[in-house]
Each structure stands twice: as structure tokens, then as C-alpha cells.
Image 1: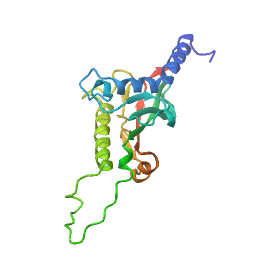
Image 2: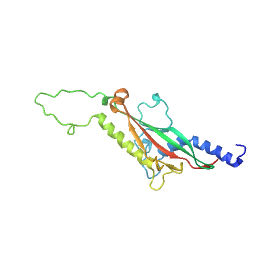
Image 3: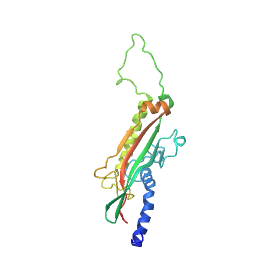
Length: 202
């Protein structure tokens, strides 16, 4: 390092500090509510109780609908001599609580000679309603991750988000509701996507 220009070393150190707060920057974008995109937090008219960086532990997430921003990976890419472009893989943990009654609906036997309805004609159960609500809330989250038309920087916080040419997809993986409802009266999903940080010399 002593052979490199001092200014380059200082810039590299500064960018390292900025790179380490990627989770905080992304969580701030998702919690933002003063733009044209859907607000996520209930306090701003959205559907989520919590939007924050990092996973606080199971005991602090019970009973709250939450988006918890974490990183699955960071690559310190070196696209050209003296240039670096850190790339993050964000992993969002989504928790959606449902009422306990949804876990164990009462079983009823059909009365002799009674009319049987097909599933399409019957009223949806509380668990089904909450799965649809979860889908709706995730839809708003995806709109915010996409960002406004023509600007994929998440408010200038990154070079680009979910726009890497070969890895630009946003992936949502749902946990099995049969398991999570029975075990914890909640729905869970994981969202992953890439983000490129601004390039710097080093």
C-alpha cells in the first residue's frame, strides 16, 4: 500500500466505510415514504409494522409484520485496473403473523343430505385471507425495490439495484405455509437481489 498514492488509499478507506453500511442504506430506502412509490410502513399508510436493517432475533419479531434487511454476500469486484465496484446480495427476511384461529379451523362434518360446495364456492379461511394479504404486501415491496422509472439507484444510495445485466432478478421464495402456520402462526418469505455500489479507485 505504501507505493500507492496517499489520496487513493484514503479514498479506498472511505469507501470501505460506506460499503459497510449498505444494509442501513437499503433499509432506509425501503422505509422511505415521501415519494411516488408505495409506502411500506403502517405509520405511513403501508402494511408492515417494521422495516429495519438486520435480524433482531425471533423473540423480537413475534406478532409483527416485518421486513428485515440483511446481506447474504458482498463481492469486492475489480472491473478494471485501479477501479473497484462492490456488489451486494441483499437478503430480506419477511414475517407475516396471522391470528391463532387461522392455524386450526374447526372441522365440521357434512350433514346427511346436505349440499356440498366446491372450494371455489366456499368462503376463504382466515389463513387463506392472510396469505393473500401477504402477497399484496409483498407486491408493494417489489414495486419499491424496482424503484421509480428511469432511476434504479434507490435515491442515490447505490450505483444500481436489481439491475445487474446477468443478475438483475428479484427472487421471492415462500416458506411452506402449512409448516409455518402450524409452528408459529405466521407466514415467511425470503427476498434476494443484487446491488452495485459506486465505483472508486484503489
